Every structure is written in C-alpha cells, then in structure tokens.
Length: 235
Image (cartoon, rainbow, N blue to C red; front, side, top):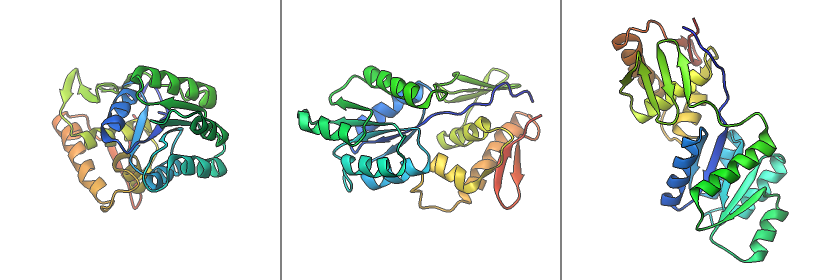
C-alpha cells in the first residue's frame, strides 16, 4: 500500500457554551483542514488544551472557569500556546484584560466565520509555522480519504462509515505505521471526558475491518498491537 504523505493536523480547541455558535465555528474550521475539539465549559477547555492543542478559541463567558481564568492558567502552564478570545462584550477594558493575559487575538460577536477562520490561519502561521492546514486528500493506494467531506473512497466508490468510524480511521491513517494506544484513540475520537470503557475502540475497529478489509478486499489494513492498541499497516 503506497502512503504518499505523513502529515500532522493542527488541533484547535473551540471552547464555546453556545452550541449553535460552537458547531458553526467547528464546521468552518474542519472544512479548512483543522482537527477541532468542541467543549462547552472552562474546566473541560483547560483539560483539552492541556492534552493536545495547537490553538485555543476561548469564549470569555464560559461556565465554571471563565475564559480569562482559563487563559491565565494556560499562560502559566503552556506559555507559547496560541489563544484567541471570543466574546459578546465590547468594552475596551475586556479586550485589554484579554491581551494582558497573553491572548494573541480578540474577536467580538457577532463575527463572520470567514473572518474568524482568517484570523485563526494568521495566528497559526505566526505561532506554529509548519502546522498549516493540509491537503484535502490522503491517498492510501486504492483508498482515498477526503478530509473536507469526511469521506473514504475505495476505487472511487464511497464507503459508508459512521462519523466515529471515519474519525477513528482518519486518526489511524494520519499516523500510518505508528502504534496508537486505546487511550490516545479515545482522546482523539471520543474526547477526554468520554465516560465509557476503552474497549469501545475494539468494537469500532472490528467494524472498520469488516468494511475495509472484508467487504472492500483491501487485505490486512489495521494491525492489533497486543496489550496496547492499533496501527494502520504500511505496505
């Protein structure tokens, strides 16, 4: 199987308690090639940013810990992590507080999704250099993963995968040949606050094998790493 590229997708934590706004932002960022973790409170935002984040979009008015407190904590722990503050507040003092806490940018609501994406790209470019959005496709011999439409095609035909099956396969594909633990896959696909058991990964891997290795006759594709997790096989 010919793997043409090995890439790293920038992970953006979107911390927004307004579900509609959060999902809109996540949709536009995902289309641009970013991996998005959407959270709705300050404590979860802090956990997600600590775990794996290349940039945090942080609403000021989060429940639990507000955005200012989250930013203050992150600046103490991860000084170089880019932070963009989101707020409905327009007072100058709030913007000053945000910048004094180390925010890289400050966006007031309502905002244009296109403008927000442009600001994210600018901050990522300044702060993370190499972590630019990547090609919309990943070619794996007969199989192609389409990042923008979140599709997997084999010989040009769309393979029907459930959303989490796609995300699980995409995580394996982006790290081809690298063993990934069940804990890592849970974190990336289900989220750090997932309450279930890590054996749910095994169930989803079984389904992927049935569809890709069995139905599509791709041969051995996903390898079990005994006592650890899984990896996508390179050929």
